[in-house]
Length: 88
Figure 1 (tube, one colour):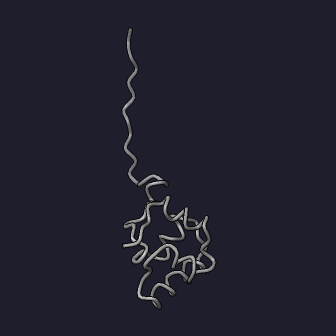
Figure 2 (cartoon, helix red, strand yellow):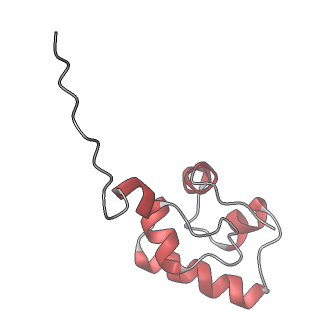
Figure 3 (cartoon, one colour):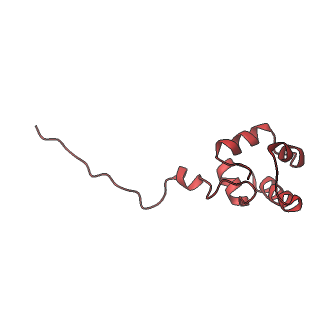
């Protein structure tokens, strides 16, 4: 009995899910683009998040984000955490 073995192909480019992973997971250094792609946050909200972060000198807690960035509700915070983001 002959077994047909196929050669596994290694993709030359990252898979879509690999491209979506953040380069780093610190919300105080994440780019607007990382927020948009990783957490499906629209451009305006992501830009506002980054601007507010600059204004405050960084975020110190998840509660502060909810308080200062009104468009970031509990669902958005959950997506950020699930994507591996944290506050350092």
